[in-house]
Image 1 (tube, rainbow, N blue to C red):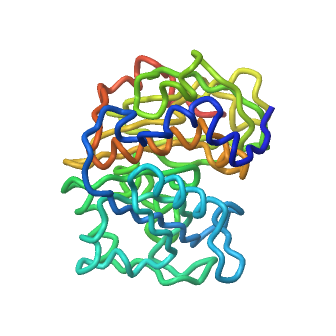
Image 2 (tube, rainbow, N blue to C red):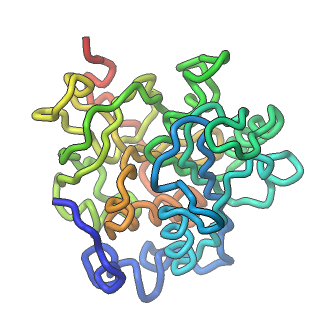
Length: 299
């Protein structure tokens, strides 16, 4: 059953404790180096989730958490909804990108914040291919792809980069995720303490998966409520290379209490460390082995 964790629990409980003290990098065996500068991009051109909604000048729930845990573990996280930060003359400032976004980001959209220009979007893909890190959470797969006049689906450069595309979701519910790579950074000692775990969240049904995905967590669909999940098990969290860049995605992160879960925070810290090249991980494609019927969608 999901619940909220207070600050002391975050410091002491489970995976949270394993990441404190000497910090995430030393916990993962990485050598000390200057903090990596991360752009946490939370523009909502489509639906705006509560965890990225701001009240006045105050940053959102997820922005505050990622900024704080990043600072504690060697990452300078800057949260913004401003698409102008991707312009070719500015994008070099960042070592990695974290997306919690929706819709066609080249439009002002729901939140009315400055969009990416065509040059800015291209600069993002070029930066990742050139070796920058990318971490996507939850609605990051509900970005570009099927939106607007472009509606390219599997041919969309963003969908090709992130590795899968959102279709729909059913009601929030407690569901089971199977851990198929407990050795991935941030999983051991956290969600990887057992072969599977149950957690309450809003679960995305997806399509247009890349065949080169290294799946980390599998969505178990048996017993789930809603027609969206009347399909075989499918990837829920994965990693892949995109050119020289490192791409990570997890479907979790809709609910506020998921963000305060120390195991989820550990997963994000591990993804940041791996995507920015500070630790290594096995990226052997395994999607066909661990989710052999992943392409089969509900009728």
